[in-house]
Image (cartoon, rainbow, N blue to C red):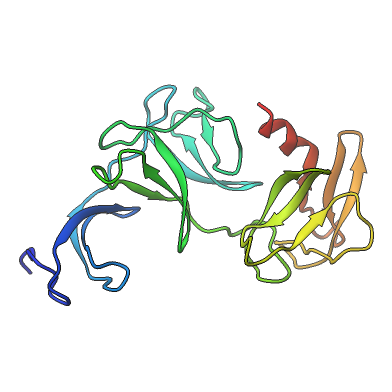
Amino acid sequence: MSQPEKCPECGKSLEVRYSKKGKFLGCTGYPECRYTFDLGEEKEALKCPKCGKDLTERKGKYGNFLGCSGYPDCSFAFNYRFEKQDPLLCPVCKKELEIRTGKYGKFLGCSGFPECKYTYDLGTEEGLLKCPHCRKALFLREGKYGKFLGCSGYPECKFVYNFDKEDQEKIFCPECGKELAVKTSKYGKFLGCRGYPDCNYTFNIERLKKIESK
């Protein structure tokens, strides 16, 4: 099939865009028209800001993240849930990438938009704690009274979980589905699965605080 000059569905112009899978033509009538045409070109990889090697997708205790392919020689990692990280640069125009939120979740978008339309989908939230109301991911946040878990669906969903409050709605283990409880070890508070020792899932609150404060 030859490359179209106009959208065959609505007649509007097409423009070059990027997705996680590569380069494509998208209709300028989006979101009313969702026509796309795959240009069959592999997407340029994100580069490590420390050593210049490719970043690869990995899964950790706190969800998906981007890690340097040069590990263990280079330990750079990027997790959009944490603050104060080295910025990532757009592989197309070399401008800084920004964390943005779209209809389908978080993504990296070029700060050079609209001249540069590079994007990188940050993936699904599999393996993360889920909101008992809407099933979206729970993220660690900080308010007037300290750290808490808040629904990523806010403001539509206002569910919160406070680590110091006793009488509140339960949250459940993303691995086995059993209730999570606030526990204390010599390293501080953490969420532990009530299915232990059959399920060893934990969510280390104190460690995450240290990561965010770097």
